[in-house]
Image 1: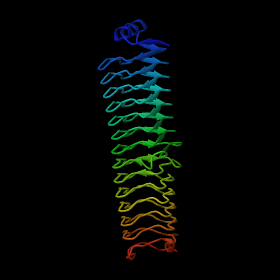
Image 2 (image 1 turned 45 degrees about the vertical axis):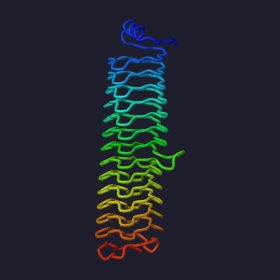
Image 3 (image 1 turned 90 degrees about the vertical axis):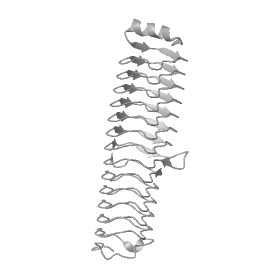
Image 4 (image 1 turned 90 degrees about the horizontal axis):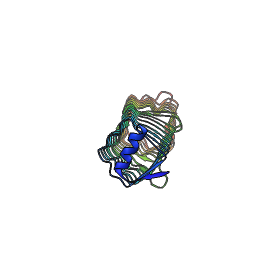
Length: 312
């Protein structure tokens, strides 16, 4: 692999190859604000390179390693990344509108405020990375794993989290995802969102049927009209959450906290509520056919307006 450390030599390489960089190690260069629209990079290494605010739109990256680099504010819209490995890089406020990533790895990457609207991500793994305020609205994620990441204030409006995906904590106590905006988010059954701290999240109209939300914190979250049928919500904290009109049919809510929750019009039919806490919850119009309320750790003082026909 040939090394290039001089911007003029790099410009000459691009001119000679018609915009293709292959088998190169680019090191220690400040390429801020450079225009690389449509450039092809294959089997390259980029170390200690600064590409802040660069035009990297419609670029094609294959088997590229990026380490200790700065791409803050870069325009990467429409770009394609395959087999790219990113370590200790800054991609804050970078634009990846409509980008396509496959088999991409992010380790200790900083993407605060980056935009991935309508991006297609497949086989992406992010670990120990900062994804605060990232915009993934209308993006599709398949076989993606986010481990020990920070997702506070991120946007997932109408995004789809597909089969084989997971958001989980390993080294960290929780995945931090406070004030998540995920209205109309669609999550495939079997996807794991274990130990996510989603206090104040907006999940109105979200599809979470069959999703594993074990030990998640959803305090004061809004899940109006959300579909959680058959979801695993064991030992989750939904204190003061808004679940009006939500479907919890057949959900596993054992040991969960629903204290002071608003469950008006919710469907709790066939749900498992052993050890669940519902003190202070509002259940007017809620349906609970086939539910054994005797197993609950606590119940609201007023159940007169709940539809308890068929409850055990």
